[in-house]
Structure formats: structure tokens, C-alpha cells
Image (tube, rainbow, N blue to C red):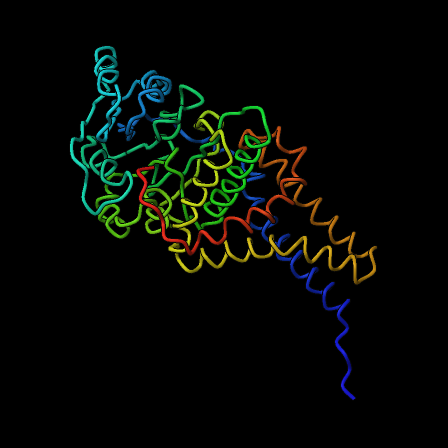
Length: 374
């Protein structure tokens, strides 16, 4: 006689396995960011730097944020390159006025669209190739450094074999649940790519706060491998070129940048769907590690509820509480590191929210990306 499967034990066992995998990610990867200590031996040698910003019809953002790049405490040789990509607003006149007061500002006016090259990759490529200096520091027109030491400290991270420096780009704090969700999702992405890089597995960076050697760009033929895609000028390029030897991270609150967050759910969802379209092109090892974490994160609460219904509640609550404690400690320290500590009191709610986040955005991995400049 064939025995029937003991489904309560099977479900609880699956829940324990899912929880174990999650805890391993927290204690192996995310702990590296949570308990990261700055290297106090960094010497702030101000090697020449080219800061590059691309903009299209962003006069308002340029008027608000560009001065933050132009008044940096950087006595060394540097330049700020603004690639004005076919703007139809008053950007040209604003930039001409700023050039009178800031001689380090160089403006490249693009008058024609690049055929067969989507998004901002062509203007960014022009800016990098025009750069006078080997260290190129990238940010966006809607970003502003949180301090006047951003340029100095990002450049100082280049030493020895370092060719790529990953920074953190957050969002301005505003009222409302949407703002908190945007900032949490940005934190959640940040804790992953910064922790993986600290573990020797860099897989992406954000164009809001990223630096690399011009030689890396030229040696790898720029964005030619994915010029047909609207995205990927930051994450796909870093995924292809970064490794444990040439990449470092800088986790210093004075090196962060801040962007203006989306104001409506529709705008934010459109932005996130666009970002998801490049993840399927990451290297296989990165797709596996990211996918396993997301998959177990997604299954955690369904498995928890099923175990509560089918098994003894005491051990189920015990396993759930163990993960909650580990997660709470790691996220508390990591949020402190990334200046998002006001979000921590809601960390349990954000964790539940991630189930719906995966449900909504995972299908975007298989969607054909729309051609948008940004």
C-alpha cells in the first residue's frame, strides 16, 4: 500500500528551505553593506576628472541641479561636460549664461538624432569620447550631489587597479506612501548591487552616480553590444565590464546623489518596467543569484500562510520570527549606511509589499522595451 504524502510536513519543510535561502542572502551578501566600514586610509589625491551629464528638454532640472556640480570643492583639474541632446526648450540659453560664470562648464550641442541608437547612449558616448581626462564621473540632469565633496571623494576611490566606482543614488524625501515606496525600492536595489560588489560579484551600477575610466569605455567599444536597447547605459555596461579586481564601491553619505522622485504611480511603474527590461541580459551567474533571491522572497509569505494553515503554528512562527530578526538587523544598519533610516520602522510592511512588487513587475522581464530617451 502506497503511503500518501504528508503535505503539512512537506509544506513546512519547503517554508524552512525558502527561509534558509533568504537568511543566507542576508548573512552572506547584505551583511557586507550593513556592516561596511569606510577605508580611512584613502588619500584625497585630486586627479583630473570629467563630469558628464546628458540632458534633453530639462532646463528646469539644469537650473536647479547643475550649480551643485559647478561649485564642488575640487581644486584639481576638472571639467563638467553637458551634452544638450536636441533640446527644444530654453536649455541652450541657460547653459550659455552659466558658462559665463563657470569656465569649467563645456557644452556639446547635438543637432541631429542618432539613427539605430536608442535612448541617451549616443549623447553619453559623445560626452565620454570628448572628455579630456581618464576618470569620467556620471550623473543625470535631475540629480544633485548631497555635498560639495562628491567629486573629490568619488575620484579618490580610484587607486591601484580600480577602474570602476559604484556610488549610491537616492531620491528626495517627500510626503506620501508613494515616496516611501520609491525610496525603499531604491534602497532594496542598492543593498543588492552594492553588497554583491563588496562580495566580489559586481553586476550593475546606476547612472545617477557612477564613475569609470575612459579607457574602460573605449576598450570595450562603449555601448555597442546593446546600442539597440533604450536602457543599459549603466547596468548592462557595468555587468559586462566589472569584476572583483577592477571595481570598488564608495559608501559615504557625502558621495550620494539625490533625484526628484516620480509623483504618480503610473509614472513610477512605467519607469520600473523600463528598468526591468535589461535584467534578462545580465551574465548567467548574476541572473541566477538575483533570481533565486527574488523567487524565494516572492514565495516566502505564501509558504508562511500555507504552513500556518497546515502545520503547527509554534514552529512556523519561530521560523518566521528568525528571518524577521535577521532582516530587521541587517536592514537597520544598511538603511543607516544609505541614509534611509526613517524607512526602517516600516520594514516589515515593505517586505510584504515586495510580494506584490514581484507580481506586478516580473512580467516586464519578457516585454519588448519601448524606445524612450530616458
